[in-house]
Length: 173
Image 1: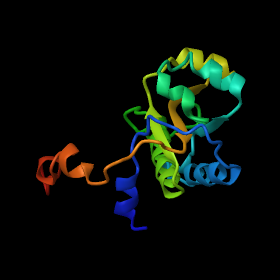
Image 2: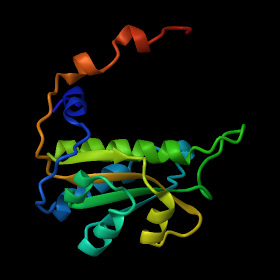
Image 3: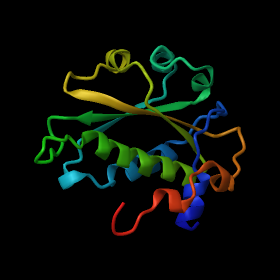
Image 4: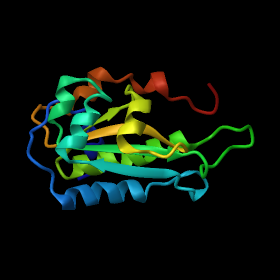
């Protein structure tokens, strides 16, 4: 599949089958995240895979949306700010690096016919507690993962994205 086809295929899934996701597919998408580029190649990420019912139920308190309960897998992508690259002005690139890994994972998931939803509006303190994260590890993104039940219009980008001239500049703003 051509890259733009794959990118158009990926969308925020909010309706999942309860069908379990095969370990091979989980391993595949995690590998895509593992090999993602990062600032200075510091790789300041940790990926926590949640599949068991008891931990999934605890995660429902972290992100309270009814559709979230149906996804059979949650990937919590975390940043280790102790090892992330910092720019000379102090900007910490851990979140950027985790976002790149998340993007690789979501595209790899689409490649194997899995749906994902990128979740940032969650209770980070509760998430850290549920997952027993050390103090220096920050949960940045939750990706719900599973087989999608909703349909997506791959041509939605024509009407639901800003036109190219509105977002692209050459040589100067």
